[in-house]
Amino acid sequence: MELCGKKKLHALSLAEKIQVLELLDESKMSQSEVARRFQVSQPQISRICKNKEKLLADWCSGTANRERKRKRESKYSGIDEALLCWYHIARAKAWDVTGPMLLHKAKELADILGQDFVPSIGWLVRWKRRNNVGFGARHILAPPFPPEPPPPAPTPQAQLPLSLKDFSPEDIFGCVEVPLLYRAVPGRAGTCDRVQVLLCANSRGTEKRRLLVCGPQAAPRCFFGVSSEALPASYHPDLAIPWSEWLSQFDRDMGRQGRQVALLMAAQVVEEVAGLPGLCHVRLLPLSAASPTQPLPSSVVRAFKAHYRRRLLSKLAAAQSERACTLLAEIGAGITVLDALHMAAAAWAKVPLQLIVSSFIQEGLAPGKTPVAQDQASEVLQVPGGLSLEEFSRFVDLESEEPVSGACKEEVGPADEAGSGEDGFEPLPTKADALQALGTLRRWLECSGTTPELFENFYACEEGVERLCCL
Image (cartoon, rainbow, N blue to C red; front, side, top):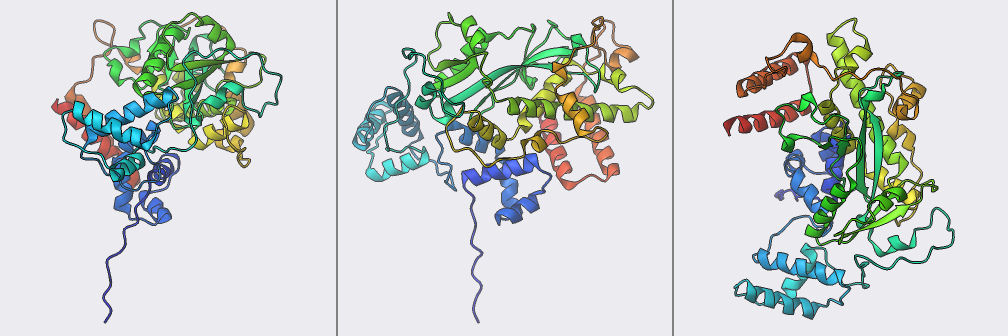
């Protein structure tokens, strides 16, 4: 009788694991459905979800081998990291780096670190595979402050600007300032509901910078007791974007990664920060105001606003179902800047990678073949219930309409209407309040016949809250 052998394990590569995470985040597929699609077991998909942050960090680093299926750490991790840092510096200086040069440098670093280590050809091959290093054609990065080329002759929109050709697609970033009426309802927008949001992402969609939200209030009441580290986005108490501060932080972040990147910006902004000293790792590339192309593609901006509007309508509809006979505009007045920060961060996370890649290529802001035409309108304008396509389209583009004038009112919420403490602020929740709220939420989920996937998310949240309560 023939004995059945063990079932062969089908391991997924790093790129496939990122596809798994995108499917789980952007669709309603369960872990079991995703497992069947990739022909793996459901526990393997569960492990990928648990290691989500680590996988995304590897993917965004730009140095990991995206086709590898298992990450085997080296016994000499200190030498590995030191050699990789030296390699990036050598590449930035346009040196011809060869295999013997790397072996010699690895031995030098081992002596400095006091480790008894003799690098071999086999070790070097594995080091290159681990860190996605190859010795093909020379890749010369632009120096920090290259001389400006003479103005080129007019070129078609699809042709890349000459200066972008010195950078890989992962190192081409675009940023744009987006006005957002954060608590407007369909057909009504007030002048005092406006904040400015700074969006920034690279042309491959693998790196989305943390949002910066600029509002008119220096200290919104909703921020009382909130830790700045816990905010889902950065907040600046002025509607004007602090470009110098933001660019300096961006430059420091790129310096820590040993990268030279290009940042597409509006020409007038580049003129404002022309005298900013110390930008060693970020090269500013201005786009003329007369150009139809934005530094960050308009389809990406519109996708962000559409996701924000959908999240806002969902929040308002849930509140209206609890407070019967209340107008949507009255409920919208209770949306705070802190609510807006959470909804904006969630909307930015939902903008799909594929849309960012195709938008950059179609607008001539990154190299690559023009992708197959996609129905981007259906991606952006998934119409919520109760609105027609035309109505939701107008709601997404509400900032372009004339706002309703009126007196500015300070944000109020349910706590303000019901009364608050002596200092005018709602008392801060205690650990007991948090644990009681978890019990209430679980009971409501049990009585509502929710899905197992939602319970999994609840368990993760419950564990996180319980850990914080033990600190």
